Length: 191
Image 1: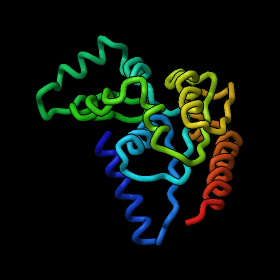
Image 2: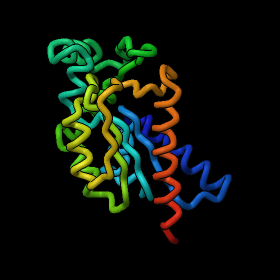
Image 3: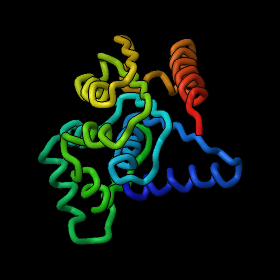
Image 4: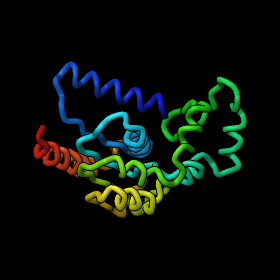
């Protein structure tokens, strides 16, 4: 994930240099919530506003997603001490996982939300489904509590949150909530 964090930082720096962007809002959906959290913990950037959508900040949830502890350990052991990548068949495409990925995943255990929140003093919004089977609702609520987030919950959707187009009305409602939050929150920040 360190590489992903660096990629995000490169995009932010490009926007700042190219467009004169001063305020930076981040939206982290699932693993993106983990990336935003890692960036905060490692003092990579100061975000001005954050939206989390089902943030994958629990190591236990990640182990479950990878097929349970036995499968997770087997994946790690298969590439341990090599520069090989483990091909994991993700929900939407194959993911190549490195030793560094597993090290990053385990670096903050179950305290990731609290560690990240301790490095953040802005406003945040957390959106999650009470029916999410990938990131447990209790994990999203833990992140909500740690950050003192405004929260939007719903009980119909699963982890896809219909971002993939199954229900245009839901996609529109979620996008409107996210854009409205950022618009209001970033507009009141002064530099």
